[in-house]
Image 1 (cartoon, rainbow, N blue to C red):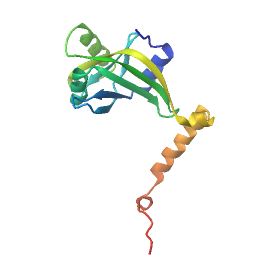
Image 2 (cartoon, rainbow, N blue to C red):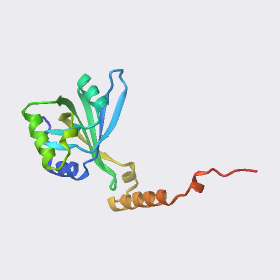
Image 3 (cartoon, helix red, strand yellow):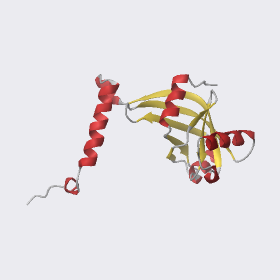
Image 4 (cartoon, rainbow, N blue to C red):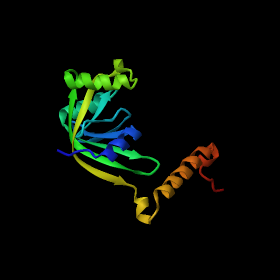
Length: 163
């Protein structure tokens, strides 16, 4: 059993958005964003199926999964590898539904709850840190990129023409 450290729990709680990797029945990897990932106890993550029929089907077919949570500003996060279980009823399902309801979720849209027993946790760190950049510098680079991407116009998308 792998226990999720307090600082990692805090990061997951703050970020909320995660990417869930599953394996489809034809053997291809599939990655799906989920905004409902939460820490469940000391060794599980949980997320809900709102419109995730393929991800749920993949998880039921092959329970091996990976959950990536990354802070887009610092470009750091964690990779959680584990085994998933899908529930549509029962005590843990009901407790999870209560948790999401207390957060204000529209639980009428939830079709299933997926629990991931965390077996391994590994840090995710941008290669930008290998250059010796600090978190603040990496964040500034991201802000600059993000700001410039919104300042582009249609003209910026048209390649130059040679005459």
